Amino acid sequence: MGFTCNITKKDRWTRVIFGGLFLLGALLSWSKWFFIILAVIMIMEGFIGWCGIAVFMDRFKIK
Image 1 (tube, one colour):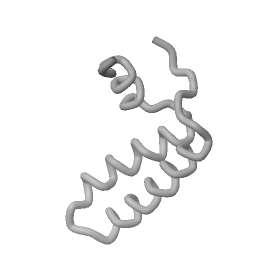
Image 2 (cartoon, rainbow, N blue to C red):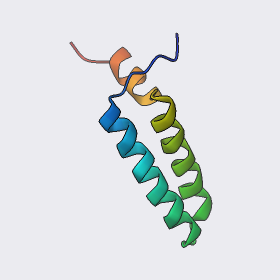
Image 3 (tube, rainbow, N blue to C red):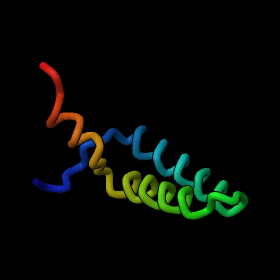
Image 4 (tube, rainbow, N blue to C red):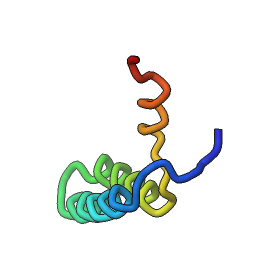
């Protein structure tokens, strides 16, 4: 199992942008830790181009 890019460039930028928005929301909200963790995960996925959820969904796809 390698960490090759499995999401498109558009998805990567979308994750970085939404991750940044979640991070901003965390800094202004009471549920801070949930949003910080979610934001960091999304930003990391956007920068490295690998998404664990996509791997999981491909593995258990109904054919």
